[in-house]
Image (cartoon, rainbow, N blue to C red):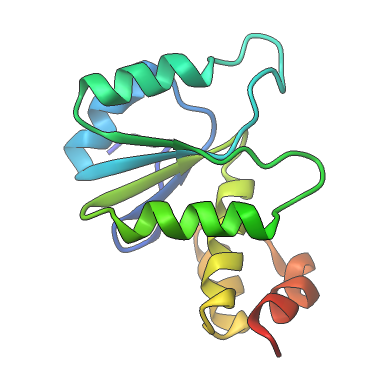
Amino acid sequence: MSADFIPLAPNFWVAPQISVDDLDAAKALGVSLVINNRPDGEEFGQPNGAEIEKGAIALGLTYVSIPVGPMGVSPADLDAFDAALSSNRGGVLAFCRSGTRSTIVRAFAEARRGRPVDEVIGEAAEAGYNIAGQRRMLEAARGK
């Protein structure tokens, strides 16, 4: 397993920015869906999403781009995330600059499905991501 693939939940990993070269390792883990939560052009020299998509497709992986910018996670982002997961039958690798946005997207999706916010925050913390500052918004997403 790549040291950059951080297990967040069973069959769900988050990662900082990946490259095409990382896709073989993802596939070896059982990943069948790659979710890009990073907008193109966010940082000079970052790999282009289209290049990663092309590499993923060449390996038989599904690639979905759900860029989360400075305005944060939107309901449309969560809808796209849920749609991608609903048709996926293998592992998931979600990435962004550091892995935090990908963790937050999953946390909001989980909260929206009714999962207790403390569990969602705890899961992220176990993976090394402190998303406790999102508590109020997660509770709102859960409908609490």
